[in-house]
Image (cartoon, rainbow, N blue to C red; front, side, top):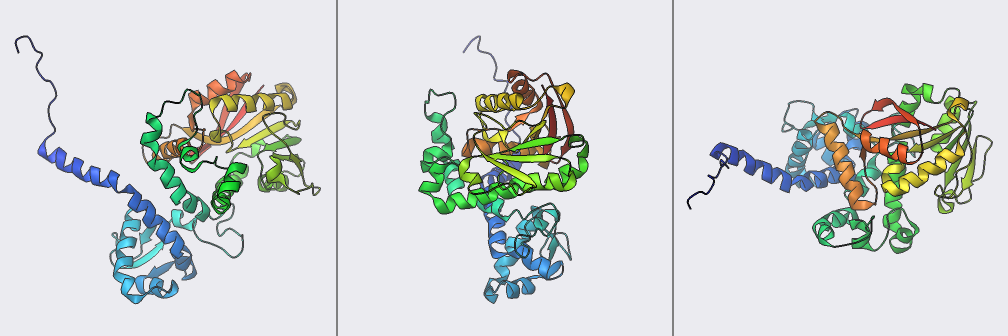
Length: 374
């Protein structure tokens, strides 16, 4: 037609389209890597390699795991994929085809020790995190994303896909009533996730706790973090605040005091309040309410008042760390009403809650340690 603007879109080349086809397969089948990862955890492959002294051949694994010998060729294919994805390393070549394997830092986190003792000091076994993230309930919720996006919900904080698919709120009493076994799996994952790396925070960010006389750990669960703080800094008087169903019959033991309550209503007064991996579970509006209560619970900055926040800060350089942060953000969208945040998002929350200043003390992996001042 006369006067029509020429089409400026240049189609991809054949070579680009062939590579794009490979990318399409990769994205469509990423779940296979997750299921292979889950399979390795359920079979106990990381623990078997650890018990074998750090390296194990395919025949060693077949014997240790009591697998039918005929499954050895299939196990080789599974391990080849997991070597490529960094779960294991090949001890004898770079591809994982020859059949001798060793642990990587990732698979060290999946070694199950005797009892509850972590194999790596300060980093509890992360098997529950894998089992929850690859569970049928989580995957089914993610499969409902397209329908969830199409649904017109006027509320500012619509039910999560998880809630819509399963009729229960994750980490809530509704979940324990409807699916008690699944609730247990997710709560074990939450505990493992929350406790992982906290010893590193105490070592690398000790200045955050020096000079603090009293601290309230909001949503502190079983008190493991509070006990670790008191062990490292005996002068700090620690209180754990959590919902009554979490606190249960726990009582103060002379080291840590336990309070059953609701952080949306009131927080036990202390010089510092700690929110460790808490706020990403909540919407911005709820975070402002929680932070407002934190501000009420602490003294002025000149008297040492501050809120200590440990959470993900989106913004790592492009690569696996940024991808993990973005995946965690979409994961929170699938499972909760919360989100992961970049530094600007965090700054806005602090301002809305009435805080005057903050600083990022240190970034540790995908997470950061904040001090927020009234």
